[in-house]
Length: 193
Image 1 (tube, one colour):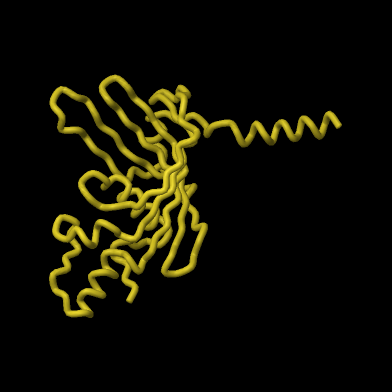
Image 2: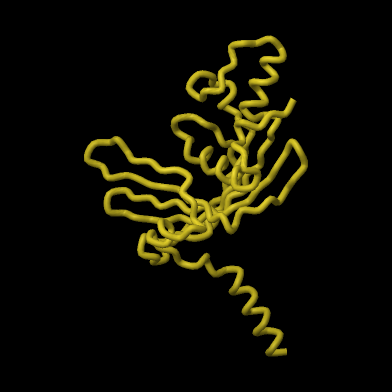
């Protein structure tokens, strides 16, 4: 009886322990972490910058019902705001509807005789406001750049569309990199008639 209790307790602890600590050096030097986006703030006198990485070893297809594809990956975001340096670790699941990709929308518009469609995100808001990607994310760990654990908001679970505008490019780049890791093709180039 005690043996069964200890095994149950061990299993419960295994599922509640946060992901293994990670440092900024590991993110930037180990080949399993692929940098997929970065930014530097242009606000004067503010040192704000960051980069997002996917762990290519965690990318896996969890749903395949064309034109809908679902892929899951672990994403790391290294973020610095002046002296605050944090790495967040999130499980992200992206659901792709290839019938709503930019290329699919442009193709259908061309077939209907509409020539005003442009696949440049700065030129056609209709295509990029709903590029056919939804994201679910859950923060699972948070660390300092040196690997020191930080508190997280366990209840944070989001389901949002991934849009490709000036404010949301980061998530689009992450979603596209995850899709590319599996299918070796950029999502906005996929055409479904």
